[in-house]
Image 1 (cartoon, rainbow, N blue to C red):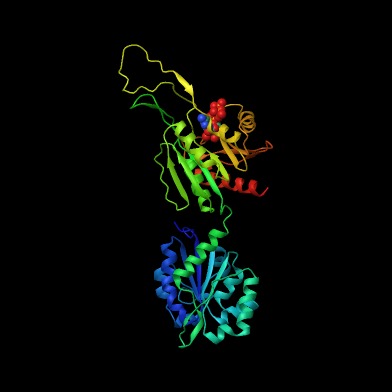
Image 2 (image 1 turned 180 degrees about the vertical axis):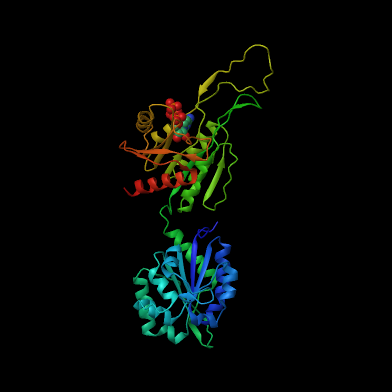
Length: 402
Ligand code: CTP
């Protein structure tokens, strides 16, 4: 999945021959899962039609501050600038670059550029001598010093017939450049995160087991949230119908508490962060029957023995890892959770109280309190589990930088 998936991309097209390539660029952004809006300078419409770009982007394309045809509708540059997660100026002509450098805003593209709060990428495109000119060089340097990100022009045959630098980067390369740049700046880039999810099944005989109602949703949402912020995730999941498809998530399926223990210990040493959200069985049958237990009239007693406490075992061998546990409590919530932090050598604990409506492991929502090592509690509202996951990951990022 592309990091651009779900992102709002505002493409600004200016008046150079390379504008014809923006049809392909819009298609690639759409293919990556981004939502695309296009704005144009009036001059760029000589090179590609707004109809082409609006058809491909599935959104109206604007090039003026108001549309006469649409009853003088005001095209709000501030709103467009705030809408965008990413603004891409491609092709960026010498004229537009120079105006951007000096804060001139005599068209919709320039006014939107000045209003935008998001990262701004620009892909210069012009003839060889224009590209080499000191004033262009000055614009490129200044624009980058303002924090804009340049997608360098490449060398090749130019529309004039001259051969040299000044060709706009190819659409595929523009998209790859932006994706790589976004990933390199994500807060969990380079971090390895181990997450446990779901229930565990403890076999009684070949067909029966002791399990619980955990869906695994919380752990899977945590995995997605961490991966979307650049982490490499090892998701160790007990039996769960949850699905995940993300190039940064490596799913390891396990069944029993013992399997989960082994898998966690295999990956823990290389992890920077471990989040144990699984609802691990605390007991398992002491003896597993090798044949299906036959029904009898008398009552059946199954002797149980404790499983290994995975979280505690990771706390005991902790080096630099940030270790996060979960606590599901019904009474004395804060006190119990605080004592777990100390007993299991945790950095954070996420507390669910079953007394809170909508919290717990069999719902789509959760209401949590996060407690840190200094035993400071931070309470969150009842939210869908994907938002809860984002809150937990954000707290972890804050702790990493504390
Ligand atoms: N956990 C674990 N291994 C186990 C049991 C639990 O790693 N065998 C982890 C869970 O993933 C969770 C945390 O421990 O992160 C808390 O589990 P919980 O059952 O609430 O805590 P316990 O220590 O078992 O305490 P108690 O049952 O007394 O509340």
